[in-house]
Length: 378
Image (tube, rainbow, N blue to C red; front, side, top):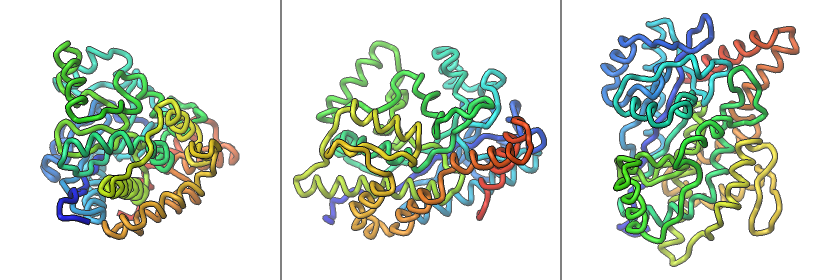
């Protein structure tokens, strides 16, 4: 690649739920001392989230996926250690198996107070956690160009990450119920398509001038140009319970962006498809995860996800080699064969029911599983 190649640096944010290992329910009033100790150990890499039962961590700017993985492992372990000192435990899952949203309290912070006031019940229902992946692309025009092309792959990335099959004690039948909750927010879902950064900026400015948003950080699309960093920020994934699964999703994303950049450098581009078509695959990923396949728009047929994954791996192989993350990309195969967190949670739940547990006991078994798997191998 040329010397002007973007840095393709990585930053990853993960959100966790804090639970009481005795009751398995969420810790509605997390002690202030817990957050203070996390911030003492992790400094500005940890912060409260919208709800008091949540906590968010984020890597610094990393040169590669291996560095990001080490940082995430260190931070997960630290949060788990500090939480244990206060009788709590983090779970990396995008929904809690049985907690109720209306029992939660939001963090007393100006940004969150405004969000709660503006969005009302829609905001109060945000008992969900996600993973965000920032990839360094210093050129604004490039960010907008790749924004319009990478949308095609968003359902493929969601399917690898699903971890939210339950909602308020019910098996929703969806592998990512988190998406259903988040889609209630305005300015969420698939991103708009723009011909230039100037066009994007003009649209944002209209909303700012009208007083409906303060800045572009209130655009909650599945992927967006970050308002804080020179990055293209992936936001569609559920948070992965297994750290290696999350790293695989991040690796696939950065490699897809580099592949799209290679096409652009060679005066080519990935075909842009309408949101109407991509939305169908997004729904299939939300509903089935990687179980039932996605639509190949070129041939107009549903193709098994495992076949699509092989195509993606080959598509980005040269990029994965250049970015030294081919093993991380190829780990996606293990996700498909072994299942995502959603699959494993459902297996634990149904096994408990078959063994004679009642519904509540089976859901508690799922929480125990999530507590253990969140820190496994750290």
